[in-house]
Image (tube, rainbow, N blue to C red):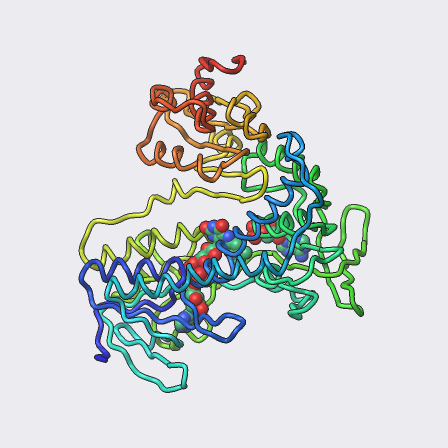
Length: 475
Ligand code: FAD
Ligand code: AMP
């Protein structure tokens, strides 16, 4: 193999592998280096997302939700089930199969795009030179006209509650449990904490989530957050806000967690503790001391809007750079960089990156919340529509939640769309497209939506912004 490439990508997560594939499609000679190893000690492409994040979590969310619905909703449909139960080992096996199909799929995609896939460690020595350490420890210098750093992120540890891999675990550990813990503690009511808490609650754990902040989901529209909290409580999750964890330690078979709330020092005893307090960018042993690439005080590689690091032809994308830690944000950055390298026009519209929380009800949004628009001083109007007024949602036995559109009062431009309810993560795509084209609520009002579909809720919310909703009284 020649050691000279147009592009070398370090990291094959959802930011790195699309960068490599697009570079290949652009007829560039490209290599992608990745060091991810699964618990079986084998290399696997796809990074956090495919191996320990988006995909396995969605597989378990789906299985546990089906079980929960069978338990709580089937009777309403007139379906009688004898004795209901589940086989966790089979659930985990299904999840592992989905992960394997996704990660091995990348090998095929690399082949099709002509990407040289290299398993092992990559390190930027200087502009144009990457050191590659293979599995056997042998080292080679690769010449690269362009280097793309896509090394992702890892779970943030809480110093006073260090991971022990058995009782105090990270999100990956929480996806691999082989028994349902009787009592599960989760530190952090962020997206990951809520999704993992939901999985195990549905399967029978007593779940307690400790969150330091006094507000629930501060990044979401507060009307959505309030509705969500109501449903999570109904599911039986004990969410304690304003509860700052100061330490935890394993004691025999249990874990004792100390936290402080407005009443003072408290203790919680659980069987497993998931620390889900966020993720930090990962740059360990990535940059030679004189590589010239700058890392900010929080550990993120510094880049401009186009993901240039400032060092000639060295780029960085995904979780390792600023912005939301989301797979689709990283993917767009990876593709943009590969196109820019090939001298094509490319950009990422950071204003329309959607956020989704895959709980039940599902939560999704794009653009500004009502609170953000109000704070900006811009005059706005709201159009909202509850799913209980949607025939399709009622037919699905899923009437919880609503669609809320925030639009500019003067121009009618859509500034944000917030959905809590069935398939919110799918429905938000229409809102993202609308905002990508700077659509107004009138544009959505004039767009035909099939009946009966959940998407009609978006249509009706757009109509409601001008008090023209048909299927719900206008206020
Ligand atoms: P990563 O996926 O972390 O990939 C980086 C890769 O680079 C890894 O394979 C790593 O081993 C490799 N690497 C690092 N350093 C080197 C080196 N020096 N040499 C060689 N290889 C190296 N996001 C969503 O959008 N939707 C979701 O539903 C979602 N769910 C999630 C659920 C969980 C439980 C978790 C933990 C995360 C979830 N995320 C989700 C976040 C998502 O996984 C990340 O945003 C995404 O994986 C970031 O992609 P990345 O390519 O930047 O980094
Ligand atoms: P996210 O960054 O979305 O993954 O969410 C992580 C959550 O963990 C945030 O809401 C933090 O406020 C919360 N958090 C961080 N440290 C602590 C702590 N010591 N105790 C309780 N919650 C915490």
